[in-house]
Amino acid sequence: MLPAKSIITVRDAAKKFGKISALRGVNLSVWPGEVVVVVGPSGSGKSTMLRCLNALEKIDSGSIVIDGTPLDADNRHVHQVRTEVGMVFQSFNLFPHLTALENVALAPRLVRGKSSAEADSAARVLLAKVDLADKADAYPGQLSGGQQQRVAIARALAMTPKIMLFDEPTSALDPEMIGEVLAVMKKLAAEGMTMVVVTHEIGFAREVADRLLFFTEGNIVEEGPVDEVLDNPRHPRTISFLEKVL
Image (cartoon, rainbow, N blue to C red; front, side, top):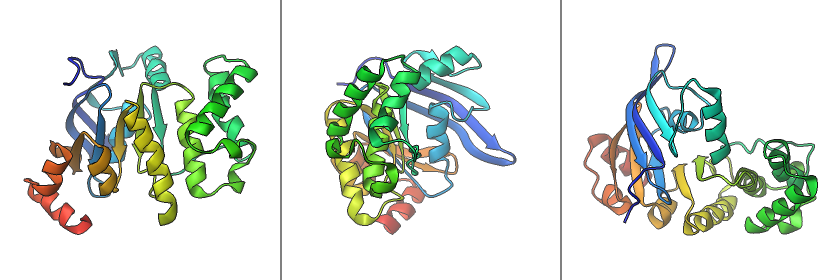
């Protein structure tokens, strides 16, 4: 049974880039502990939606509320949301001059005010969590793509977020590295982390997601339990898309 109150609430969110409408009145609710997977064609607005949930982009109209905090013009609210929402991108965005340990420990020291010893200790725990305990002193250039992405996940977790957003986290990886990243994400889901995942990994969606959203032309046109949407899609655009990827 879902909690009574959603942790993410989006109402009539719209966003334009010049004359291009990236979001067209999006409505979305996500409940604590829920794993929501978002699929759809390239350019449909999926990544824009994620970036708006973390205030990396600002919506032009509508509203977004994250765990009771509205994402509005108040910078204090933006800061509060960013400390509660972790995000993992397609590119790893690690600092190349810092070790894996230093990459993970940096934000807790600078943002949370933790001591170096405390931040380093917590970072080692997180690196172990993503199966990289033995790579603490390695630099990003010494790591595979899959390992770098797992460090990026550990870095996001270092801020103890309530929500994790994943923007096609395996799209830049070689096929043999995808599984190791998905395994970490499955572990997070099993632990009850609230997750919104934009991905083309349909197998991951079937195994882990509570709900599947199909995004096209800036809006959600179909949503429901994963097997229901994948096995019995109703919207013509969903049917067309799934015929190509399944």
